[in-house]
Structures are given as C-alpha cells and as structure tokens.
Amino acid sequence: MVEMAHIVKRFGQPPAAAAVDGVSLAIRERETYVLVGESGSGKSTLARILVGLERPSEGEVRWFPPQPGSAFAAHGHGKGGVPSSPVQMVFQNPDRSLNPYWRVQNIIAEPLVLQGMARREAYALAGGLLEQVRLPRGLLLRRPSECSGGQKQRIAVARALALRPRLLVADEMTSALDPATEADMMQLLMDLQWDSGMSILFITHRLDAVHGFADRMGVMRQGRIVEEGEAASLLRQPSTAYAKALLAACQYT
Image (cartoon, rainbow, N blue to C red; front, top):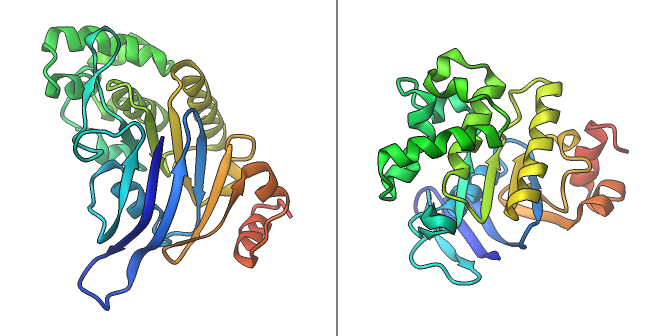
C-alpha cells in the first residue's frame, strides 16, 4: 500500500547527523505495523515524513495505487461523496493537537469543511464519528478541557477518521494513558481497523503495549531500523542485542 524508500532526514546541512538514516519499510493493506525504539531514535520524524509534515532530505514515499501530490496533500472523495485522504495522524499529546477553544463538534468536522463539505453536513457526520470511537454525542458541545485524557485521544481518532484514511499513523498516542484506558484504546483501534479496512502504523517505545496487537514490527535505533519481522516471531526470539534489551525491559525475555 505504501512504501518508504531509502529515507534520510537531516536537520541542517551535511555533515549534520541524520535523524533518519536510510530507512526503507513497507506497510501492507489492513496491516498493523508497530515501530518501536527509544526516545530520539527517529520514529516520530519518520512518521511526519510519511504524512507529509516533513520533507525527506533523501528518498521518497510511494503509494500503491499512486496518489496525486504528496501524502499530506492527496485528497479525494470516498463513499457517499465524503472527502478522503490516504493518511491521517494521531499525535501523542491531545492537549497540543486539539484546539482548546473549539467545541468537539468543530474539531471533528473541520477536516471535512476544509475539503469543501458544507459545515452543517460536517456537523451532522461528527456525531456518528464520535460514536465510532465509543463516545456519546453529548460530548459534541464540550471543549477539550471538559473531557478526560482518554476521551481527548478518542476525539483525536474521530477527527482522523473523518477523512476515511487508508492509513492511520498513531504516534505514541497511548503513552500518557493509564493501563486500563490504554488497553481499551488498543482494542478500539483493532475494531476500527476490522470495520474500515485501514492499515495502522503504531509508534511506541513500550513493547508491553503491543503484544498481540502488531502484525509486523520494526525496531529503530539511532535513525535506522535494526531489526524487522513478524511481530510474534520478533517478540519471541529477537536477533539483535538492542531488541533483546528492549524486550528484557518489558519482561518478555
């Protein structure tokens, strides 16, 4: 579905160190690909390149079938004339990604309005999107400050789903949640994937959060993917010392 080929990202001119250093990976249809690694390993930078928020210094992102323009700019129309986008992102901190002055209704509807849908129609769809993430329509008129942390992340997911993405990128989205809320969120993502057929790129530094969730997994360190494989096999028997250390920290080995 999407392939990242030989991606390099430098912040500054060579010989500046590369935040992402020659990464290639592919994400398949209906797949959950989990990217793990410590803070500063380049995971979030790679995600921002995938969604079009950063330009790579080298390499390219290829969509199959091809998308017109960049991943971030490529929009079309899906079922029922609803605007669609190949990729959407849910960020780590909803307090920074959700407009604190807007009501939930506005937050969810805005991507649709920006793609040309009438505001009244977008508001009508917002309630259904909220229900998809298992929140009551009564939250539509609240502001983010009136919602819990788990509710705010679900609102962010609902906003991402508004454009019916083929790929949902979740960047450390459960890192601030308590274990029970995190487990509920992971189950929600699996159910949404089953219903919609979308793929998921899930980024985390915690392997204990993805056991039983991932189809394939990549381990990232110092800007490079140092190990990749089927998740069950990698969790059971990693081949690199770094992956073994990550697993040991989560008591898998």
